[in-house]
Amino acid sequence: MDDVVIIGAGPVGLMLACELALTGARPVVLDRRAEPGDLPKANGLGGQIVELLDHRGLLERLSAGSPFVGVPPGFPFGSVPLRFAGLDGIPLRMLMIQQPRLERLLGERAAELGVRVRWGHELTALTQEEAGVTAEGAGFRLRSRYVVGCDGGHSRVRELAGIGFPGTTDDELLRLGHFRTDTATGVFEDPAFAGLEPGWNRTPGGRLLLTSLQPGVHIVGVREQGGREAGPVTLAEFQEAVRRVLGRDLPLGEPIWLSSTVAQARLAERYRVGRVFVAGDAAHLFPAGGSALNVGMTDAINLGWKLSAVLAGRAPEGLLDTYESERRPAAERALMQTRAQAALERLPGEEGAALRTLLTELFAYDQPLRHLAGLLHGSDLPYGKPGHPLVGRLAPDLPLTTETGERRVAELMRPARPVLLDLGGGVTLDHDWIDVVRARTDDPPADALLIRPDGHVAWAGADGLLEAVEEWFGQRSAGASRGGEPAQAGW
Image: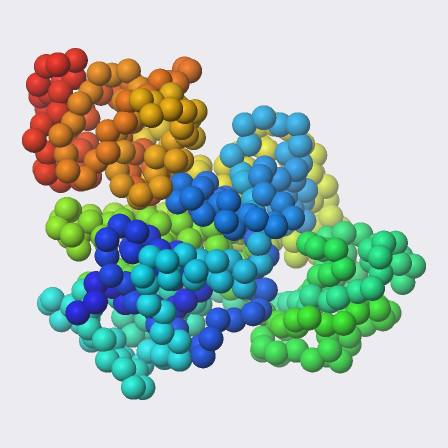
């Protein structure tokens, strides 16, 4: 019997497989496709996931050759510009990487960890029993302790588990294309593109997007009222859509990839039914860009260590309930802000123009900018109960002086194990799962930080630490002490 069967070998499924294998579980990944895809469905990552990839030592690998990684100078919030340049303390990080490359590199990491990915395996049935789940399809039948659906917006796992997926579907169709051009100076210097600006351009017929993420390749998007279902697009259909919206033809260049989509805003009613879970697009769909991979891959990192802990007997089954209680509210926040972005972007006429102008003025101030940066980053809503400002939030990447030299907090998280970071509290802990690291740093935020394997702070401070250890990581401890004295509950 396998530990976990993951349905879907996209970025979320592969990230989950890496997390499970890194922490000692035995996952297998099934995908109905015959082989990895080559469609650039996404062009980058933004938010907490960039720091979490750094925690696993993957950021350097993924950012090699990337046109951009770091704090972005700005971000289009529903066509209202956010300008972060010159503003200190912005949490938002971005990494430009197209989805095929992201999947390939995550797949390579999964293979290094011994993960099996089986292509051409389409799920048709799920059967839950007390001790496990059986996943079946044409030519295969697999039993496992758990199943996780990372199989997208049309998730078969979600459907078979009977999980509702309420929400709305947009009435506009977006056609999107990547085109190769011989124009050395870029499309905006081409007279044929006169009058058009980078980003979305509004016309009486709809909206037209022009942007570029790499030299010699530009991206064109056309939004107009639907009239047809999303799916494959021919070059002739794309050119006709440009003509309807813009009123003239554009020299688009050689098409690399053409597709169309209809935005949806949906949230799964539940993230877990017994031994079956959903994550990523199987759990949530957002109507505007910039959040799907951040939320989905963070789902995977949140769930991975909890599944491994339960499988290894380090934690009770109830720990798995915190996956939904932590990640569903995060998706609700992302759904709220992407709905706001979609509304701002599509609101027509003088009313829409007036609202966007006013918000552009408001967003020029530091406080609204910082709030929106946290919202896009996914750090505005901490996990769990209010307490110390760091509890439930991603641990700050403090520069540390340790017994083994200079290190960062992110480097301590490479093995995906809990870490007790003693910053002067004189705390000792005898626990077979938690790594204790004594370190110094300037202006420590607390005298001790208990950090979960997903990088979030479970507890801050020496007082109450033992109770937090038992709550999150079980009573597999021979005791804790502070300053040479035995620790007692409620110090």
